[in-house]
Amino acid sequence: MRRLLFAANWKMHLGPAEARAYLKTFRTRYRRHDDRAVWFFPPAVSLEAAAEAVREREDLLAGAQDIHWEAKGAFTGAVSAPLAAQAGAKATLVGHSERRQLFGETDEDTRKKTAAALAASLVPVLCVGETLAEREAGHTLPVVKRQLAAALGGVEGGALRRVIIAYEPVWAIGTGRNATPQDAALVHREIRAWLAAHGAGETRVVYGGSVSLKNIAELLAEPELDGVLVGGASLNPESWAELVQTAAG
Ligand code: 13P
Picture (spheres, rainbow, N blue to C red):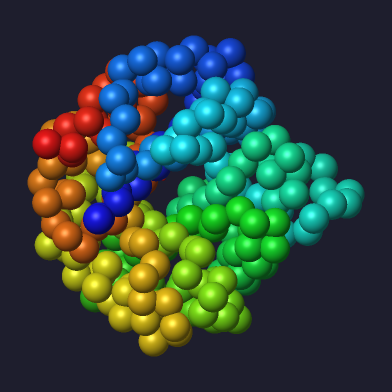
């Protein structure tokens, strides 16, 4: 059975009380489907509240938006993988384009963060994707493969199969301009080929970038997509529940 992943990246929205209220609404609105999982990535301050609100639901899960690669120490403002796990995280985003572009996160940082996530038994959701300039220069595939190799090069097959890849073209994030299912499928196939060559053919690959109620059915009709990673359209619990439901047919 194809088990779809619907991941909600709340970015810098929804504090602890808002997260609790959101998830209460979501749980009443969303009728559970065995063929789909819904993951929430709240800001760090809301992680524990979100994890608590989904604790008894096997199909729902909370994760961190970012982690530091060290387990502990003098890193003011940072949250480590073990600390996120203590707050209830089961997964973490790694290398989101906003981390890369706005916070100067490097390929080498993504390598260390992926390793730290795996060491703490968090599922790393590694985000890769090209900028508009890179796409227009015809560099989409080399960029994505460079990001994969940098973050995952040292990860052996067994651990690699625990990683999820999110293909998020930077030009599609928050712009209202999504990749077509065909555009995404082409890159997903290359990502899968790279993973298969490194011993992990079964890895899930999800798409992110301006996913909405309007395009979800069309996107998920493409079998290369194992799910979606959604920003803006995940912030309202009613319409997010509808989006997850819509794709259920
Ligand atoms: P939008 O869905 O708002 O384009 O954001 C996508 C994203 O960055 C998810 O991580």
